[in-house]
Image (cartoon, rainbow, N blue to C red; front, side, top):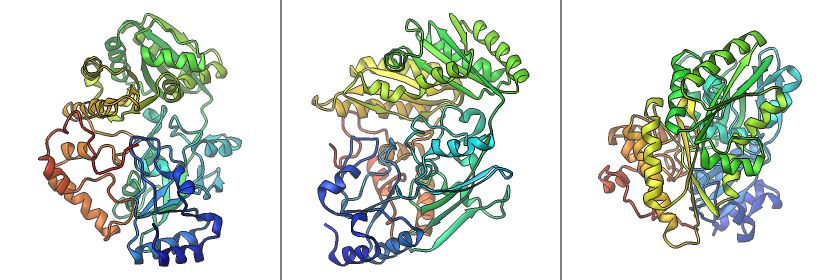
Length: 484
């Protein structure tokens, strides 16, 4: 229930339709793409201008009301889970492309602009925005910055952090700040990088300047089939070891390809234990030479079948299968839990063997899709939340995967963020001294911890209760959070 004084202040800032307080109005905001945890906010606000954002944050800061900024709600770590005592600040109405500078190869956009819309607007200038998450048709650039999103072409072109020039935002106090600039480099601490991946804990973004990339003259993709997942993993290592940095290098195992083929009909080989998608882009001469070398390396690694896209339509069809993996799996299971850990490429065979073993142990199916080139795994654990105990088993299975990622020298997230999902895993990955530094940064920006509280960085008390040990298997790791 929103305090009456705060309600009156928000009502004075926003038109009636932009202030939602009834449960039936706030229900669509109770979770993001991670549906294991849900909570109703006290209110939802939908500002249209930066001045309204400033006024909202000033009012909430004065009343010590928590604020959770929200984009399109496509996140997969619970980063937009509401605080029952706070408000959700939706940036859905900030959807204007302010300007495109073809000579500087930049675009200035509002945070509610869809990822794909930037490339569509820049296409007239022969440019595009390189980071391309699978949800790019729906996810917004503000959320991409908050989570440092990736995509299938980020091996060559980088994550969101590598494709930003400037971010403008508002602190919880209502102060407007800017980080970065039009120059290629800026003096002082790299606060732009600090904002990227900060998961809404430091500021509410209102305007973002992204770097645009020239569209390549030609792009071709090789689809390679393997009768063994470990051979496919070895092929990835061989390609990178040869000094080739493909535009994209993705892997799917058999459960994933079979689910995708029913959905997209991309003509994937269903008898293969794993498939690789390897893309080369550049001039026709560069692509021709690189494709031949990739074919040679894949054959030497034991590929049982190779296919090279003949035209742009076929290339897009092959990629559409990989990008539709998540919804495809959703068609064959009542629920699925998408993990997001990153490992050194050399550890891929070991991790895949462990996932297969745990799948049998927990009696839960698991489809693997991942950015093989940079070691970013996305195991999709299939379960049915209506069956008693399956949610708990699913989370325990996922926790083991994250623990193994840490053990082999990786990290608990590659692009989905920590949110509420991986708080306990953060206690395993980072020492108390490191977590204390994280909290120090948070306090410098938000002394009362009002922006997206309880996300991304666990409290030292929480980690002390765990003893910095592995999470407790068989129980949900966040008993303090509401679960659907």
